[in-house]
Length: 613
Image (cartoon, one colour):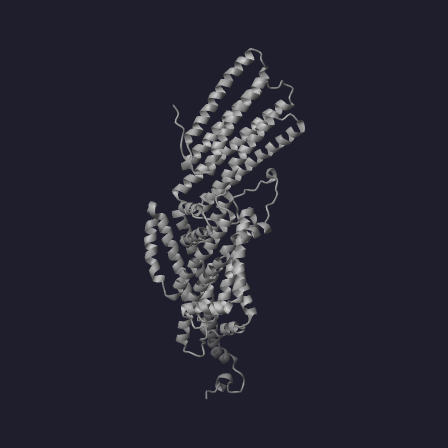
């Protein structure tokens, strides 16, 4: 035995402190170094885990945006054309979501079409059901990434992607390759991080999950809520799914609790969309509520057949639910646990397919339910300055943002025609109280037009900061010109209203019958031009004949010239005073200017110019 007495005492029996410090200090130093190293390694693994999750989420987002940039217009046309019934809508939502790898993008496009009147709410619900099935492809991709190391295959994709990015015509394909490479790199890093953490050998982790009774219904409910809360906090069901796969594949999380987390993820992602829709319009909130009802209903009925359903899915994959770590060798147990990522993906698909098969027959009832819960708010339009289609809540790609801006501009255009019709009514109004009320409404409309121009322009400027295709950039430039010209239409209407207001409250003579006849005819021509403009804004420009607008403008200009010459002759013949003739021609000239603004809007939308002789 080693004696420490010579080290501790000198020849006289006194304690020798310098010898103690000299021998103990290296031991303390080494222990401190090991603790710091272990602490550093724990922090490093944590950051590696968080970084790989961030890489996964960024890769999915980049891949989805690139796909939508490559096929955004085609996807929108597919959504509009292939939703003739609930089954085609289901298939469309499934295929579009599987293509763009984003159920949120499909939902936002669907809501935009509902707002535009291209889809009914019932058709939108069927598309959202299909989106729930299409988004399960993500889980299968992730399960494949956890089954083998795929990081070695991402580097050629990076190399090819950077080449394509610098090729102008192929840069979106390069963006897609970069996105999918980042996604697989994140999956591979997550897989390796899970292996390095040795969770299956951490007794504290095993004891923590073993403290929950796997056969208790309360445990399933607890993990269900935990999955929903985590998804809501992280704002990504894919990230929570990846964490669940790590825990299950390492053997520390039993399959039943893991699937309860997956069920919670389905609810958590709908909570996020419903909170985002709070600032949106009625139809958007109804669509988001229908999405939540779909997933919550599925979770409720699956709880009644939870274990038989999970056992059935495990049987499909070949996973042994009765195998325990103590009964078999460690390698056999890990090989069986490695199948859990496929079990989670299979359950996610089977759950959504079964839930869709049940609820697709009750779409009209779901529509009535969400309409009963979320009723249309009766808001005075003149007091409502909110944009109806552009909302800050939804996460959108630039392509989808441009679509919603187009719908907002369409609403802007409709509002300007209503404002012009108010001016026409103001001209013939004789009752002073009603005249004042109508004039006040026109003033409010003028303020609304100013606000709409500013808000839409700000929105388009924020969208233009993103990486856009050349076609999308051209659309944004055209839309900026459109809103400027539409605001000018509002100014022209307000100028006419002020002129009529001065005449109404002034002391000058009133118009004669010919004046009213000429003004009404000019306003009728102008209103026809506005109607043609709104037909273009609501439809497809390929179906619109631009020459109709140019011909209408020429008709307005010719009629203005005739009235201008006739006005000079009538004043010289003393048929009415010069002041009356001035007010009369002010209204005529504003109508002609308004017709020019209409032509400018049409030119901006169709990318054409009128040929001048």
